[in-house]
Every structure is written in C-alpha cells, then in structure tokens.
Image 1 (tube, rainbow, N blue to C red):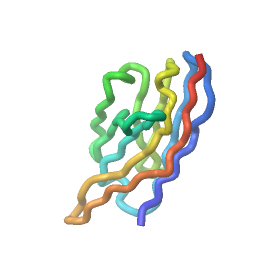
Image 2 (cartoon, one colour):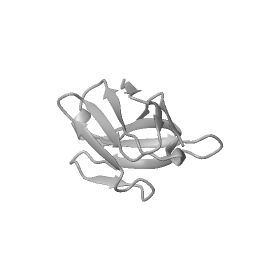
Image 3 (spheres, helix red, strand yellow):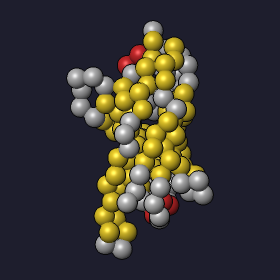
Amino acid sequence: QVQLVESGGGLVQAGGSLRLSCAASGSFFSFYAMGWYRQAPGKQRELVAIITEGGITNTADSVKGRFTISKDNAKTTLYLLMNNLKPEDTAVYYCRQFGELAGQRRDYWGQGTQVTVSS
C-alpha cells in the first residue's frame, strides 16, 4: 500500500512563492511517474506537472516558467516549487503516483493541500 502525504500549502500574496512536498511511502518510488494536479472550486481537477521515472518533466502551459516539478528518489519525495503565484493558482493541490512495473499497476493520490493566493 502506498501513502502520499502533501505539505507546504498555505496563504500567500500574489507574486509570492511556495514549495509543496509529497512524501511517499511504499517501495519502488523511483520506478513510477509522479504528478501534481490541482482543483479549484467549481472546476475539474487539472494536471499541473508530471515527472517520469526517468526524470523527464512536463508542465502545463498555465504554469510554465513559474512552477518546477522535481523529485528526490532517496527521500521518496516529490516537490513543486511555485514562483510568481497568481490568484488563479488558488486550488487544492494533489500529488499522484502512477504507472506500471512488472505487471503491477499503481494509481495513488494524496489527500491534497490548499494553496490560496491573495491579490
């Protein structure tokens, strides 16, 4: 069983920065892709950024140049550095571990952390 625990959310003024963390339990962390998603009130959950098991990243256009996804395999932790935050970045941010290894599929989500950006 895999558990994902996000932290680092909070209230910040526009233009500020936050770093989210997602601590993962369970084995084979480095063998699965990881991602950050967000869901604003009244909106569907959307992809923010993903990082493959090999470290290749992909970031949504809406946050490109401002957000950076990274991971530390030794610490089994995923990060999202968010700079120049905007009010429209306000949402609950979720981390996800997904993929398949030796026939075993995973698709786990964390409980989310709230990010609120004031104007």
